[in-house]
Length: 235
Image 1: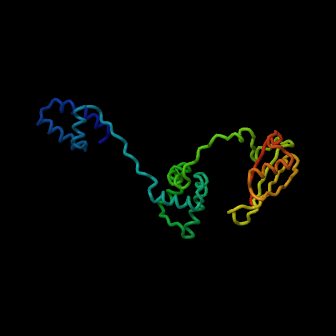
Image 2: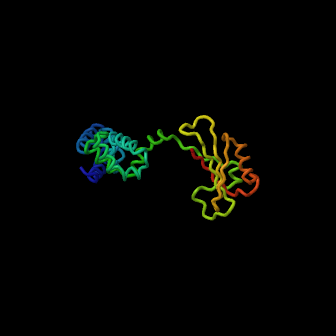
Image 3: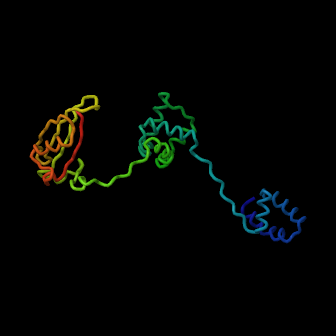
């Protein structure tokens, strides 16, 4: 029975049901419930109100079931936990390779759903797993006093260089192990001219670094170091 027919039936029978006695109501209710397929309690509410029936649309089945999501997590881990857009592009090749080498075995239905999954859906389905894997991101803290006084440029910001802008590299001579204290080399390079000075430091310590810069010919309190880029590289 269509929804429109049910609505017409409620209007036609509702008035008669509300005006009938107890015995007649039972007979009308039995007939109405049998014709419409409604539960008796729901049929009573509908006939009492006499309003058109409002039925919800049936909720669609969940497309991506547990097997698909588990397969997605396995593929995501194999792809080194990349983002949804990159994983979407890599998915066909990666799934084929993993199945060929026996790392993944999918049913045809699960495989089809996995390959049809959009990048946005991939990110949405991996949201909880990604949060557990990477944790919550730290909030950015305000710059300290030194960072506010000294402009720090990244490698992409050297468009208008002039003499006086220095790049400082602190190289650690630690070999394959990073534990303990080691000799360092403080490398200062003028970005404009390429002039470079290397100063040996017995340990990595603030006072020694400041003293080395002063020996290089700059006072840290002056404005000669307009911008500094500091990187640390192992030997």
